[in-house]
Image (cartoon, rainbow, N blue to C red; front, side, top):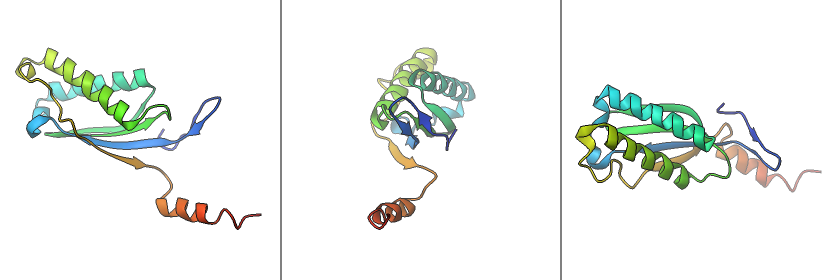
Length: 133
């Protein structure tokens, strides 16, 4: 799915994002394997609701990597708000040792675009458009 174009009546798109985010105070919450499994299930559920394809997901003890393919109507900020908001609420409800926390995640995150064509290739293509027939 990583290099499959999304097609609608009006758009063709390939938008892949790499997200990284952490629990507040870099708590090592993913040492608990049940919590990690539940987090991954919740992310899959949210991705289904948002029409987002989860290309890859990995949890280290104190941070998460997500590689997602999104529709063009969904911004990275909206994607993160939904994932972090829902997972924070549900995990704090379901795991008693997290209930006292006002929020599970930091407000910050890292996001980078990722695709099958390098920036240099696109730059070269754009610069050479005037020279074409």
